[in-house]
Amino acid sequence: MRAAFLAVLLALPAALARAADLPPCSEPVRYAADWFPSPELDHAKPSAQITSLGNEGKKKAGGKGVQLGHVMVQTQLSVTPQTSCAGIVVRLGFVNPVLRIASEFPKDSCSYERVLNHEHTHVRIWRDIAAQFRQLHYPWPERAASATVLANARQALATLARAQAEFDSPEEYARNNVLCNGEIQRLLKLPSMASAGG
Image (cartoon, rainbow, N blue to C red; front, side, top):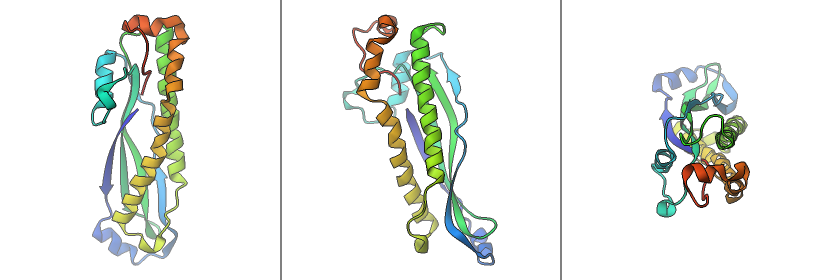
């Protein structure tokens, strides 16, 4: 799993001036999240290229591990004024999600199905993260300045996104050593697997 994070501060001064004429919101800061859409499927890149793409911007210890697939997405946080009352909305959006599976795995193979299943779990985790984001509550409503709210939302999203790394556990990857009768290792010409997805 790899996500690029963007933060956008969209609370324009004119919109904030209009908010002064509105009644206060019962919840001055509301959290919203888009649905994580079905990702584009990319089956054209070899595992070496997927590993390289997955490691971009990451500090991988020694660059170890082979990625058989991954889900990449750009997350976007925006802060905008609420329209019906004086308050702000923090929205989590997902841009250009792509699910990649290494081209070494034929579509009708056990290994392809195994990697696809692993990556679909990452998609489900993103959808869970979006649902949890919608349930957030801003802890300091008296200090609901847009920049402070955005910083708090970034931190909350980073905490929620840890679920992606927790799923990519050594135990999850070790299953590849016993599933598909060693097909993954044979197709990649590897003696043993250090990593299975992302």
